[in-house]
Image (cartoon, rainbow, N blue to C red; front, side, top):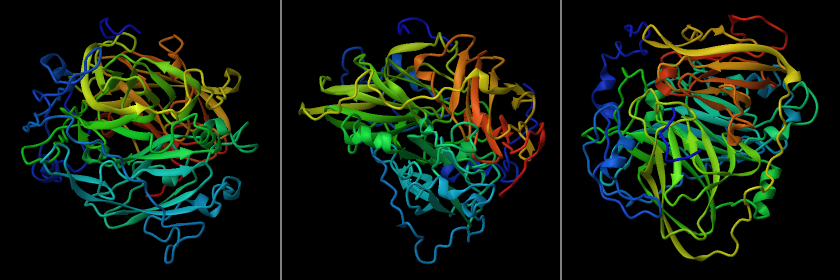
Length: 593
């Protein structure tokens, strides 16, 4: 895609966010959500490499414009180091620690842990089970230097600690809620039971705990009920975040998100043989935008139903940090963890990325990616080669977006601006490293198993649009107890995802399984999107055809727009895989509140 051409691109609401009136609109005022603003406009930055980067100018300021109040603080960007979230350590491996009885908490544990729902644990346990404890609680950290910002986070930090697990290594994460409202966790990109998937009304109530049983499994080949494990589905870059009904935007904005990185023997082999960079050269980075209030708290507007844009561009909870790197290859897991901002990432010297994968899955082979278009929740797994880079190099956002609708234009004709807004400064140091990873464009990674048209048993169409002042699918608001689609376990379906337009963009996330994009507006998708995804971006007026299989676990699960304000305002449906063919709609078949 040419980068110097022009970018492609109500009724009063009858659905209001839960407890806005009940709380007396307190969320608009003091405390964590008193306000929220931007900071870097007018701050001075360093010099960029060829093609721009570095300082914030009038031309680049609009790339970081919010759609609410403005952060009242000034700061010098690239003075804080990029933080790397700590690795979460298990309490024990193989057997639970003393006093830890799985399921003996208020919200219990998935019946699959006990062999329920026809789930044979032994078939999926390739490694001993690990036991963890996680706490949802408040904390304080500095998004910009010298300003203390209250946050909500996992173990009190933003981002939360990074889990590192193996495929076939089940985990029980006992999650305690020390906050004042109900929570829920979705392991985004995982293949896990419904009880543990973060269904919007399967809460962790205040003062209570839920045992999240993560099988960390892959489905089985064929009909999904028997046969060997389908290792082409082995996940790599997952993340976890709040998923409570009507409250997701509020709590993700507050800091409730973290990484879960998974590995199987194939990926470990690529790392141990120095094909892919391993620790300490494997870096997860969550990109998010925030606005600060005059008291340093994060601004949140519960009446914004369009999508919240902040004016502080944050990486791992710091506004415009710097990261010191050696002259070698690094692996970066970029996550768009924003509420409503879509990023398109570029290196300031025009150097391409080596693409390893998208969302949770590695590509069949490494590909060249000039830019990285990331809708909300999308991940890009890439390598950046700093061997011959300038001493300073910037990661830029080049996609212009001024409101929650999206960047305007269409998917294939986006409004791009170069130089872009600098998000991270890479400080490149030292001599060239002789032991840098060997991956290059064309290096084999993970074999891909396509879903064939001959496997499709049903076609369903879902239209994501606006109605009655809020957000709908097929002209209906979300109903938690209704199964809008009841696929049969062991089958594959064709889904048509339609966006009627109006200038709105919708990143559609489907839980439980990967899906494979067949066409976008009747055309073959870009190479980076032809394999496995869990989130697909619908531009204004787009229509996307996907293939998807349903295996292993009974529902209910959800699919929804990952513009978090749209999700909270009811742009969500339930799909409920069942053992026997069932017409929809139906009541959901099981519930674990």
